Length: 366
Image (cartoon, rainbow, N blue to C red):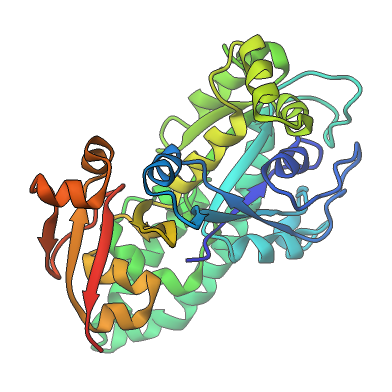
């Protein structure tokens, strides 16, 4: 399940520095606009202590954690929706992602140039929001022109419903609000899925702060929280500079000591990766055996056959049953055999909704 989060932001807000910390793929991090011209894609391991604990108990030949893809997308300027700067490229790249990580500069530093000459995260956010909204508005208007006649003169119920939904979203976009907050039922978004609207994508706001603000935040962060309070979006506070310094430390112990000195319990990068995973509405189940302990990515709410299909489509087609062990039970009893002996292994059918952390074994017949 190759899902992508796109890192976006104005030039010089720290997104490429943050990307470098997230991935082994290297994006040029320089003190000038447009230092990232092509989107850089990094495959990021999702931190999950559960897979490490399972590996301790099972001693497998290999461990395969979950991953997501992070895309560092070229900086944006005013007028991008009309092709200014790298606008068309930026908008095309972001359209293919599943969610947005929006980095906002929330620190003062005269040595780091700001594309608009001053630090103002709310203005920066509104610049990107406006460009995405304008592009979406153009897309919506074009589709309205196609379906309006069918909706008003014909008996096409889907066309009528689509027209109604698009009309609501058009008004919403024209008022300077993103499509994700439009007052329509969640199921109705299915009627316009093919439009791949930019402002429908879920968003995580990352406030890039100085070292002194990483624990308590600052005035810029508070302004961001107030500005996005009605968006149902998470706000994460990270210092890209600190994360860059952590990334240069070679050993696990050195990194932990560095974090302790700063009064941090874990790195911001780990928090960001988990937040991105959650943003995509994903969950994890495990398979555990002597050959391999592996984490599998599914969408929250998947049934057992759907989860089996992530391993191989044949598993879903020929699904018979799933043998399920809860993670806590596996840790408590220490092995699959002990779990079975304790009567804690359940056998589930096609209607079972997989829970995050389930350890599963599938029976199938093709």
